[in-house]
Image (cartoon, rainbow, N blue to C red; front, side, top):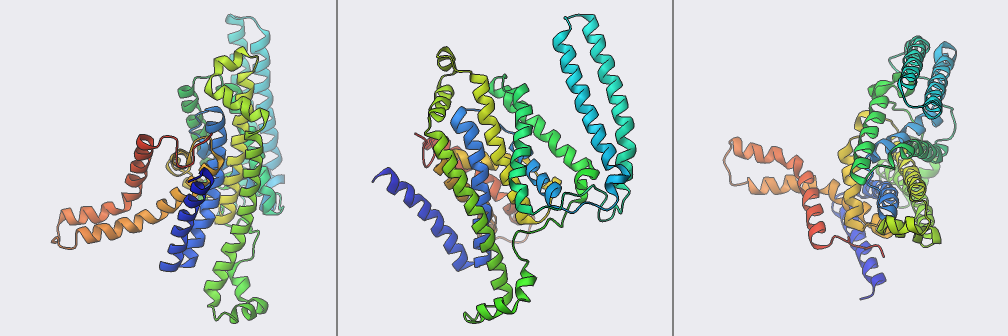
Length: 433
């Protein structure tokens, strides 16, 4: 069997699993898996660009996904009336001032000789700058958060189409990736992992606590859609006339139609990213990145700037993660900082890449669909299994414990899948060449 035929069969197996879900459960559930599978595939592509192309161990993917979600709120929401005059401009001024203080500190650090004078100058600059920064920022934040705090309390966005937030999310995550890469990419792989994990937690903490930016844990629940709402379709005579030919229920048909529209948008993004990723992988740049991944010392001896190339590929991977985060927030129609958990947006994405095949773009896509399907389906399968196991047991603490533990079956299954793949097929289902 050829490699192409085997790969096609693997994708057909995953497609058959999703179709069986539609036939046995509901097509709404199947399409929900498809949409999240498409987004997960984009996330896996971003990690694969960093790990599969260059061997960069980024375990802070949740932070870049969250920045993409933040972009949807900042781009698509309408500006909150009175927020900018009340304190928005002062907040912006405080942020610019803080950036200037950091730039001045870097300048002093580079220009002054080592010694007590440099330490004292940096301490005075940073402590004084922090005091002035808080003096400007705190009253402005209080003024913005006091504006209709029950439903707003933030500055809002630019009121632009939500689809523009997708590339903006990529740019925002890429900018953060550049800042992180400039400081962390000189570290060894294990230290890089620790650094990216810590920075991701900082990003999530900021999103949870800065209400003026995104309402914090109070969440934003009114992100506009790029597709119609179900209720609008149900009120459309044209839509009702169309589905009447099939004898379909208007409520179910409207939900399926909306999910199909989302699937079309996500599929276009995924195909474009696959095409760009494959073109980059098979270009001289891609061959150089794989050479650096396999032997950094040899590549450096051939005159390649390893740190600079690592920064390039790290930024590209972060941009893809930011795009996926914006797509996810658009699909959900809300921004919930508390939902950005490392288990879901770091560990699970890494499982997708490892199972699919590190260094293989098609493998990342396959892993995205397969692992997300299992993540969704394992919990109901676990409930059914535990009810079957405890069917003959009498009521008691053991039976209740087994039934309560069924909700954690997905964590057990993901761990088992990862261990089995690493033991018996470490190259993944579709290995990278």
